[in-house]
View 1 (cartoon, rainbow, N blue to C red):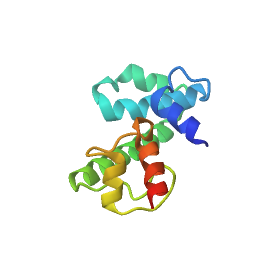
View 2: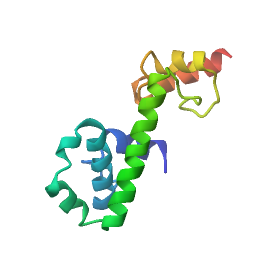
View 3: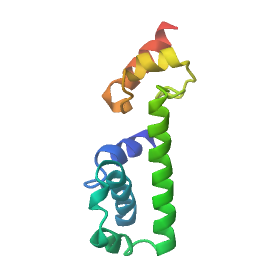
Length: 121
């Protein structure tokens, strides 16, 4: 898995040729759980069943729910990622400078700020 594929999964999975139909369905599941869970209706789960067993859907949903909750919880603590987009371990002050007041995708400038910080050190 490369950074480019991760970026594609975050920003363009629906139109990407980097993912199978099953992977797109899983990414759609994750996206909707996070932004619009009301769209997870019977038709949506019928589509998931084309790619996954009931047990796999439950496992995937549990994992997605856990991660959404985990990130929400850490957000309430004003906790920032401990690693920069280029993989360096940093303290909370440097992480806040890199990611901004609200952490964003490294596509939104964090990678550049992380690289500049490394050069300054």
